Amino acid sequence: MFASLALGACATLPTAAPVRGDGLAHLNEATQVGALVVTPRAIVEDSRCPINARCVWAGRAVVRSEVAGAGWRETLNLTLGERVITHGAALALTSVEPGKMAGAEAQPLDYRFGFEGGR
Image (cartoon, rainbow, N blue to C red):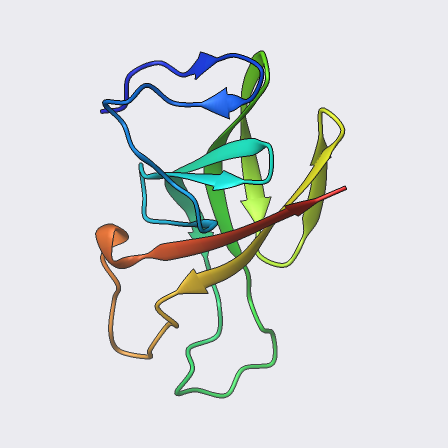
């Protein structure tokens, strides 16, 4: 498990828990997204249409994520393709891999999430 976040002038984690700098993360792996540190904690929903099927609804993916900034931390449910504003910073879950396949179930540790920030 990750140690508690140490927050100073910018959001950082203790050296015992490395933070990726590319906006990509697996479950329980921290990544830097602008001034934020985002750690996906759980897959709340993955009802995306399998890439080898035809669907009348594209479905959605929702990931419970811990988001930290300078002096604050909160947990948000982030929905694929939807932008949220928290503490004056924009954040979006922009990708969820692997793509779903009909007849195959991805394991939680197989997932990788992409995040983007902005203003």
